[in-house]
Length: 404
Image 1 (cartoon, rainbow, N blue to C red):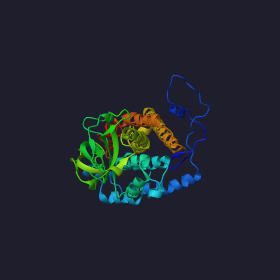
Image 2 (image 1 turned 30 degrees about the vertical axis):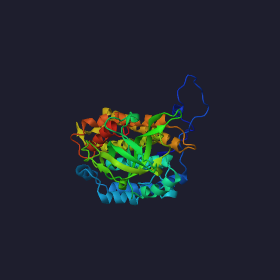
Image 3 (image 1 turned 120 degrees about the vertical axis):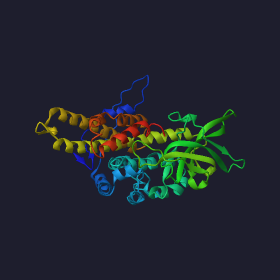
Image 4 (image 1 turned 90 degrees about the vertical axis):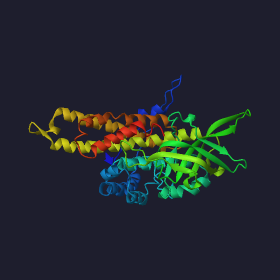
């Protein structure tokens, strides 16, 4: 049965879990594989406390058409998102966040997907923007930054992609040079396609630094930094005029002689590449529930149309060909939703196992857009939100979660 959008299943184990086993020459058979995540009644009750007010807010207060037309999320909408705690969903309660599990985060992500700009803004903030601090930050860094990031007083951005480096993150050119007194780094370089670029007060920036290896040779390695806007030397390019998710803030971010204290290095000097990959692997899973939410809404809207539109004196919904299309869409949505929540459940399991393969599969399946094909026939004559969702899909497929 379904409650709060989560399916409670009697199935104990899913063969899909075996996909987390990395391929090797020696194939081993495991007796136990990861079970499909079960949700207790207490967890469902807790989830309702978050789901109901968030659904009410998106249904009654969010004007997605205006956001898309104006190309900006109104400040009053951002303020309400902060009041609902949606900027701190994944931040532990001890730092002022909601401390939600990944499963609960995925469920709220479904609701937030009703507006693509809001969904992307929130995801860029916490799924990747502040995730480096959560995964690899010191206790001092967490105590200093997470409380204000949880309330939305600070908004975070993830700065990795450059004009000459996308998926090839190791080729970035932004450089951080250690001062002679070894108290700060001087940061110079530019990042492109940065979501929340002009909204952000906190940037997770990846830059080349010079290190001495174990053999005594100098070499360049990537290091991750927490950079505050008030450190100075930070400017933004003009907002990108995107095809979809127009209300989200996307722009270039330039760093010119920005001085970053050594205390703001995340993890080890030279360990930034691993941090970036861990953040991206962790953040990709959220695309699954976002896409599942969009697909559900589109199916619902299309069903309304099919029940009212008549041909040959019969509603379209009575024709077998149309029913077949709905069956296909329902199947694709079921697969997307199941993959998303299975992966989220794996991420919530003790020890935070390696879910990089599952997260990548969720991303690829989510962006494939097979279920969207049905709507291509209607988007140019249908009113909002059909065209908007299609444009969001195109943007998600080409930029979001592919290169940051």
